[in-house]
Image 1 (cartoon, rainbow, N blue to C red):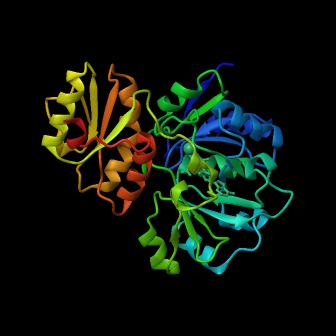
Image 2: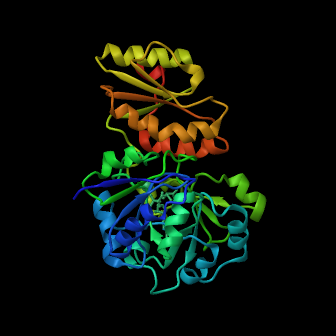
Amino acid sequence: MNTHIVKVDKCVDNDESYQQTVDCLRNGGLVAFPTETVYGLGALATDPDATKKVFEAKGRPSDNPLIVHIGTKEEVSLYADPIPASASELMDAFWPGPLTLIFHEKPGVIAKSVTVGKGTVGLRMPDHPVALRLLRLLGGPLAAPSANRSGKPSPTKASHVAQDMDGRIPFILDGGATGVGVESTVIDMTSTPPAILRPGGITAEMIEAVIGPVRSETSAAESEAPRAPGMKYKHYSPNAPVWLIEPNGETIDNAVKSFSADSHKVAVIGPDELTTDVPDWYFATGKRADLSQLASNLYDALRACDGTAADIILAVEAPLEGMGIAVMNRLNKAADGKRYSVDKFQ
Ligand code: TXA
Ligand code: MG
C-alpha cells in the first residue's frame, strides 16, 4: 500500500484536500491526522472492519480500547448514557481540548472492537482545526489511538507517523507539529469520585477546580485490575533502553562516564540548562521551569535518539507538578523502572 501525505494548512479552507481522506474513512480506510496532543490513527468508530484495521496497523493488543473523537459536544448523547452533571461541567470547561471522558456506552452504536466490550466508551473533542474540520466533514465519530506502532513514542509530527506507518495506511493528513505533545488526560466518569486513569494535557488541579476531588489510578500498580488496559503494556520506548536520572549536572557526567567506560554510547534528553559537552548527544527539550515545553518536545526527543548510535538513553526527571506529572508518567513507562544512581554504579 502507498501512503499519501496530504499537507493541509491550519488556517486555509482546503476542503478538496480533506475530501479524499473523508472518502477513505467512509469506505472503511484509515487516516492519520493531527490533534492538539499527538497524531491520531482514525477509523470510523461505527465500522467494525475499519476499526479492526487500526489494531493491525499499530500492532496493538485487542483488549486495549480506543478513544472516540467527536466534532461537537452534542454528539456525546449519541454514544453515552447517562451523562453525569460533573461530566457536562468538565466538557464545558475543557472541550475542545486534551481531556477524554469515560462514560457508560449506549449499546449497539460504537463498534465492539473500539470499546472491547467493556460497556464504557472514551470520548474526546480535540482542539485542533484540522481534526475538527475532518470530523465535521465526516459527520461521524472517529476511533483514534495515537498513530504510532504499539510500544513506540507517540507521533507529534507527520514525519513521525510516516516512520511508523509508511506502507501500512493510505493517508496521513499533515497539519504540522502538534502543540501539547503528550496524550489527553483520561478520566473515568463512571466511578465515584471520578478517577484519572492517565495524566495528560489537563492536570488534576484544573479538573478539581471545576468538579472537586478526584482519584488517581494512573499506574497499573495502583489498582488491582487496571481499568485503562493501556496502562499494563510497554510504552513510549525508543530502540535503546531509557534510564531516568536526577536533574544534576554532576550525576549526568558520572553516568555518562561510567556507561562510556563500559563501551556504551549515551544520549541524554534533558532541559536546556543541563546541556553539557560530555554525552555524544544531548536533546534539550526546553527550560526546566517550562513544563509545557518539556511535554511538547518529549516524544520528538525520544524519537531523535533512534536516529543516533546511542545504546543508552538518559532522561532527566521533570518536576512532579502540573504537566510534569504527565511527562514523568510517560518517562517512567519508557524507562520501565530503570533509574541511574551513583551508588548503584560504584
Ligand atoms: O491525546 C490522545 O488521547 C490521543 C489523540 C490521538 O487523541 N489518543 C490516544 O489514544 O492517546 P490511545 O488509544 O493511544 O490511548 C487510549 C487510552 C488507553 O490507555 C486506553 O486504555 C484508554 O485510553 N481508554 C480508551 N477507552 C477506554 C474505555 N472505554 N475504558 C477505559 N479506558 C479507555
Ligand atoms: Mg498511544
